[in-house]
Image (cartoon, rainbow, N blue to C red; front, top):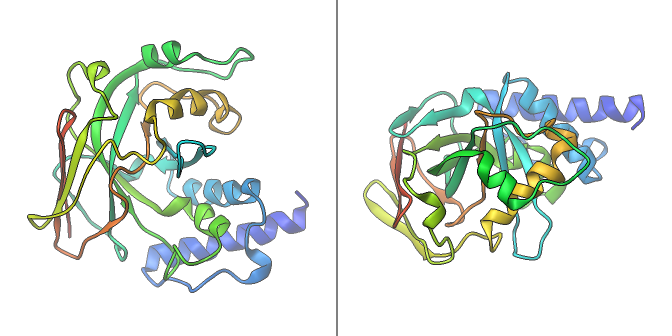
Length: 254
């Protein structure tokens, strides 16, 4: 990447950061500032995330069972336990029901790929979670996909519920989930993670993502994609996600 191109992408990140911080979204990036490859979209992500401090984990997912996963950093400052009140500038207030894992051991980059068994052994706990969606774009789902990906893949917060006992016994293909906003059920689904088998995402991130992540670290979170699509809330709304086996998680918007 040339210095001139890096400056253009830095300018794009600054526009999105300003839009997020002020709650004044932009319609789109100027044409010359839009990412033209996944590498450039990830450059945008890293610039935006760096503005919020340390990385607390990663969101990873795939739109279909056959698709190659994509991932984005989750700022540590945006991670909170269940029943939190989400404060600060909030505009979109999107919600996704997810299953997340907290790492208990480091998985540093190495030449030999990690097996599923090694990755599972390194996990400390499994949790129900809500990913909060935000964006610097007015209508993020209608713009060029690489631009949406560059804007942290619409990431705006992560809330986790209590750890699940005996999580390895859960059959995620039959797990049922309900998301309710202000006491009204919005979505109810079974085995609906978009990646097909959410567990496939973990070794992929540990191996294919290591060049960018620097390797997964103990204490980091990995959340594994939406079960319920994007559900929108309002200022003052409360949200509850209930998994049939994996438990509950709550949040409230200021």
